[in-house]
Each structure stands twice: as structure tokens, then as C-alpha cells.
Length: 287
Ligand code: NDP
Image (spheres, rainbow, N blue to C red):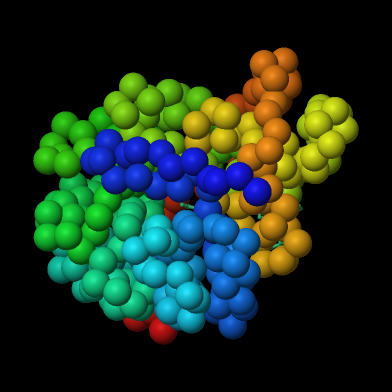
């Protein structure tokens, strides 16, 4: 299998364009899933404090033969921990749970404009401080709308390296994606196959037939050719392998355009709207 491309972020660090997402993998299954992925060749894992499996991601990395410095790990701030002192505590705990003295990429998970008086700027300053000390190599945001990005960029000393947003053929999040491109903020596409929701689409099925690939591989390849960073979630060994095997074929311009033509704009969104989302579960130290 060919190598996963490395993309350069706006702070000079590089990130493998394909990784494994571990949202909704139970802690007791996480070590196996991550070890499987590392065995296949994945070198990028996307976790979050709220997924409850940071510690198990760290355990798998520790158990593997691969050095920590060869694996790119992303984690994200718990929604209950936006106040600066809380954010410091949460970042320290995430670093400890993952088991080294740094995290490659750390994100504000949600902007939460209805909580904390909408003040994610004070939270961002904490991330900037941890980046300047080397404990967070790159920093970014997730689920930020254009208005949130504008507010952040106006005050930030360090611009976000990425914005991790819902993006798949049925919901292409065009305005946010385009704004990010103009600001050199890389787009990370969460739910890249819409949790399976796009895999029975007849247009995608036809392209799968033409290319001899599965519908999941076709959709993931569409993301790669658009320059998105992706980390499909799977805990099924065959699918972990299948999702990695997308670098030996190319979609032509017509096939790319046909998939892009499937956008349903807001009607295709599957997750919560970031302007309204205020889910804030109790913070428990990762473990
Ligand atoms: P995905 O679009 O990655 O879909 C995952 C689902 O698709 C699982 O049910 C998986 O099943 C199934 N699947 C995976 N590969 C295949 C395949 N080849 N064929 C058929 N089915 C397949 O959804 P996620 O929501 O998990 O998104 C991916 C990652 O994005 C998350 O794990 C997380 O890291 C991140 N994310 C971030 C969010 C944020 O707010 N920042 C929100 C949501 C996700 P199975 O595991 O049983 O194989």
C-alpha cells in the first residue's frame, strides 16, 4: 500500500492526511482498534477527552513497537473545561492520559457560544500558552462557524492550524470550508462517510463499480483529492484496512464532480448545529 500524504499545517508541523477516529469506541475496545490501525500503517489517531478513551489510545501507542514521535495524536478540550484554570487542568490531564509530555494537536472541541458568555478567547490564550511551551505542538478548533473564526482570528496571537468540522458528500459545509481555505486553516472532515449514511448512494455505488473500490473507499478518496484531513472511525479490522487502502487509485474530474453534486447543504447535516450546541457533561479525569 502506498504511503499516506503528509500535509503541512500553517505552523510548519506536518500531519498525516488519513488517521483513525476513535469516537464511540468503548475504552475496552480502544487498545485493540488502535493497535490494529498502527499495524496496518496508520500514524494518526483522533481522540478527545469527551470520548473517554484517551488513556487507552496512550496504552496502545505504548504497547506498539512504534515510537511516540512517529505517531500524530489529536485530542480536544472537554466542554465543561473552557474557563482558563479548568482548561489548564484538563490539558495537563489529557497529556498525562495519552502518556507523553506533549500532544501533537489539541482543539477546542466546540465553540459553545451560549455558555461562558461565548468567551472562547480566554480559552484560546491557554492553548497558545501551552503551544509556546511545547506541550501542544499545534493548536486548533473544532465546529467553529465563520463568525467564531473571525472573532478568534481578530484577537489570536496564534491562528488555528485546523478547524475540524462535519463534512461529507451530503453536507459539504461549504461556507466554513471556503473561509478556512482563505485563512490557511486546514479543514479536518469529521464523519467523513456520514457514519455510513452515504454508502448506499447510487451515484457513489456507480463510481465504486467503475473503480473496483468500495463505496467507503470512493468517498474517502474524494476527501483526499479535495485536500481534507480525515480519520474514519472503525473498530472492525477489515474496515480499518479497507479505509487505509485508498492511495492506489484516482477519481477523475467527472467522478469528483458527481460526488460534489450530492451536497444537500443544511439538510445533509447529521450532527448538532454549532451555534446552538451547549452539551456540557460533567468532567471526569480521563482514566
Ligand atoms: P464515520 O463517518 O467515520 O463513520 C463511522 C461508522 O462507519 C462506524 O459505524 C463504522 O463502523 C462505519 N464504517 C467505517 N468504515 C466503514 C467501511 N469501510 N464500510 C462500512 N462501514 C464503515 O463517523 P464518525 O462520526 O465516527 O467520524 C469519524 C471521526 O471524526 C470520529 O471517530 C472522531 O474522531 C471525529 N469526530 C469529531 C467530532 C467533533 O465534534 N469534532 C464529531 C464526530 C466525529 P464500525 O466501527 O463498526 O466498523
